[in-house]
Length: 479
Image 1 (spheres, rainbow, N blue to C red):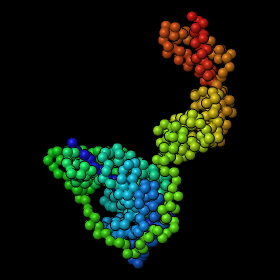
Image 2 (image 1 turned 90 degrees about the vertical axis):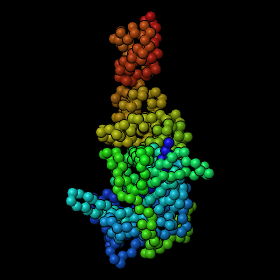
Image 3 (image 1 turned 120 degrees about the vertical axis):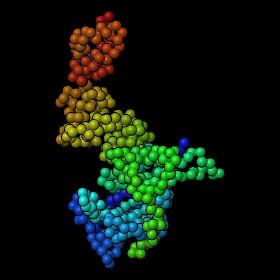
């Protein structure tokens, strides 16, 4: 048996007004190439970089959220390599003294979180390659985990939770499809029967880095494939070599790109054009100041929603992931009971969300109107079907609308009046003679059928429980 060992390296473009070391705009939505550039990010001779304070603050907030250790002393380094997307011939990054060390997320230990500048974007077309420098110099977070992940699913969950954290903190949009978040997996396998005098020590196999992972599903599939590839290679008498491999989404396989560089190949040395950072001397970077700036973190909100409102895990997760719906839900249920909250959550997560995902044009109702709708459903003024129909009408209404007024206009208010319901029941029992006979012969499902027909007869406004009782009484009388 073989044990996989996986470590992740995740880059995320940070949300700042300007680039990492200059005043050029940080605009990921710019479509015209080479617009957001200047002599600094294009590495013209004689230019000097200046550190983006907001980018540093983002990294410190991320580090605080994951309970990492914030550096007192930090500095930037030159990482030398030659490629068309690096105008300077080196990248300004961090090596010996990152801003954050340690921490954990979803139980996965984190090695470090540091800050660097992004590279330009290469565009390869038939017969030529082009370079767009709009992205060159954008502030980039790099987070490195310890090699402690043991399966593809855990890696996928970790990456999703990190994306959610970055969005919650406002540090990054982290859209994988736009390249704002990029994930690389270091995968190795080792024999499970390795014996050590130290039980906590685990023999690691040869590490292979997998790139080109542009979705969470790709992360999971690439890790699973690479794990099986390495096992098959070893079992066949081959040897895993340290290399960088890409992921072919179409073929669902990894492929060789190049042999892996070591850190010495980059010839790191401290960046001479930037000052050293002594963070304890900068009040806005004091740990207590950073800690006070954090919003409610995803895992805390998830637990609070489940505990405070007794929500199912799926509903709590939706309200954590979807900030708009989460805020709407809490406005609706503020000061209400857990039973009210659960019913409101049900209408939001099933009916309202379905309307929002449909092609139907509409608007989110006000929290006050939605609260009134839930109250009508709880009190019995609206049946479940009537509440759904009323909500659809509210959603499609340009200016929202009072649910009671809308329900009355469309005859959706639930009828409890015995005389009206008796008329509907009598009509159905005369018309549905076959179902009546089936019920008398012991087929209990016929009762539900008759209730449904009575609901139709009352145009969906009849109270189902009242109709049930009336039908049962009538059927007993017919015996």
